Length: 144
Picture 1 (cartoon, helix red, strand yellow):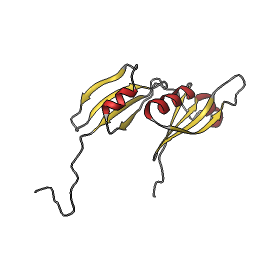
Picture 2 (cartoon, rainbow, N blue to C red):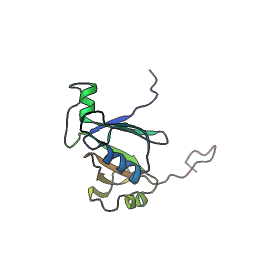
Picture 3 (spheres, rainbow, N blue to C red):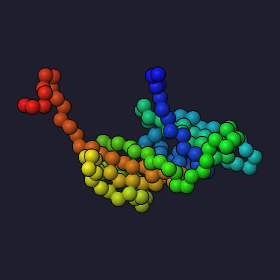
Picture 4 (cartoon, rainbow, N blue to C red):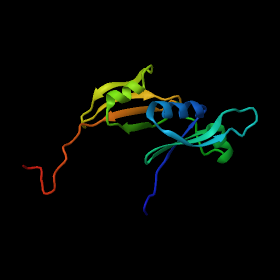
């Protein structure tokens, strides 16, 4: 089996707030927006966001229940985190200005510097920067 793509769908009561968080703070672009279909609801029931080869989707719990009754369980907080590797952690932190970190800035044993913030859906988004590794020239083994 060859996978073509894996996309995370995050279920929430705050689709538009989450879309706004990822577009304004992390530079995603909204590629799909489906307006709420249920009587009395406003805003979006589903959005897809893209950034290069990366994609996230947000769907309302009510819409998910209509699509696939019983398939989606509410978990608060969610039982996962999004791990986002960035080129420059200081720039990423600047985009989070005004938010309280959910995970304090730290050095990890596996070589990254990280910090985490909670999005409007309740998901912790860990921003991580790894040190740059020097480019090897052709024929270089690393022992020179």
